[in-house]
Image 1 (cartoon, rainbow, N blue to C red):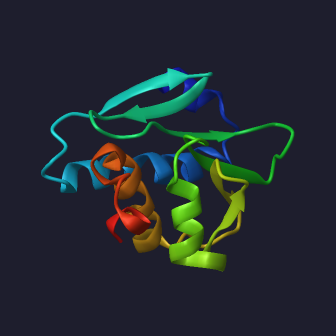
Image 2 (image 1 turned 90 degrees about the vertical axis):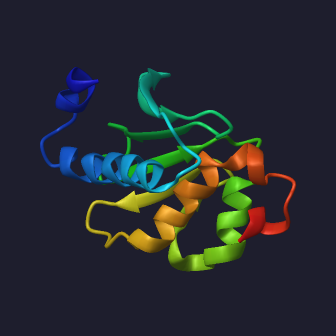
Length: 131
């Protein structure tokens, strides 16, 4: 994983480190989560927990001023985030929350989104995923 993060341009690393730290911190704060796996899926840093939906983060050369946190596109996650937070975030269809390099990250709102993804299979039957 270290080599993946070091492969990003220097100006991108702190942004992805922030997302990574928010994911790990949110998992640690949740008593239902006992273990989180950090791996690469599709060449992107990915985070998996039992009963959760995979979260990925990445930056792409074709959009050098933007980075993203990705969620499973067939889930209700991004649709729920749109309902909960509207224009607080910028979205890519039903698969990602996008950030520009100079964006201020709404940390509390993003941590709620992360928590919903990490607990998705416990919550997917609930309206607005229980939020």
